[in-house]
Image (cartoon, rainbow over all chains, first blue to last red; front, side):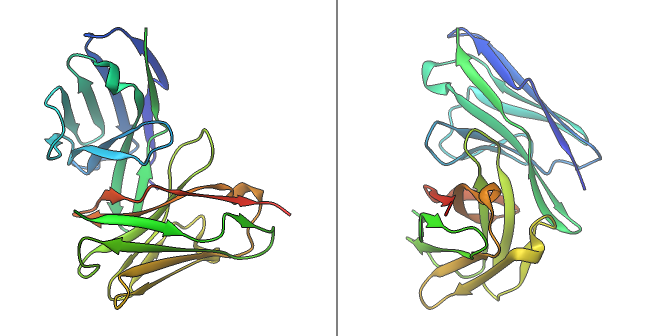
Length: 109
Length: 116
């Protein structure tokens, strides 16, 4: 099974800061890596798919990069509405399996 | 816009079977995979399994022995059954559409508590 290691588990930053979250896969997953935002009491929302593609309607301050085993999610200028928990997620097709990272809880300083 | 809505009992007794249904509106259920994902309170997300509109299924190996999924294309619904539940199965259960190998549309989630 492919394991996903996401870090940090929590993060405190100020409005306007650049925020970076990393996700490492236990083996090469090419670019099969997605990023989600989850606000309290809500379902996760897809932000980035295939490592670096911005989902339609998602603000451009969100971005993703990486391939293989190491991936990065960035918020270029943190806004108050970005307070949430962020998850990476990978897909493996042999056998079919979707695995989420442990999550990063983002708070405002 | 595609919308998903989970329904089912919010309280299930230990050792019994949890049953949930997801109703899809705003689009056809055909030609997609549909998935169930759960989240215990304060914890992360766990994929339970997926079903294609043909009825083909894939389950998380950790739950495979207890999970059954089905689909009813005439009603635009798909369902989850999880047998022999324990307190560890208490969670918010989400249904989601899988498009190009990623969950893109999600239901709002439904809390299922396992307790006598």
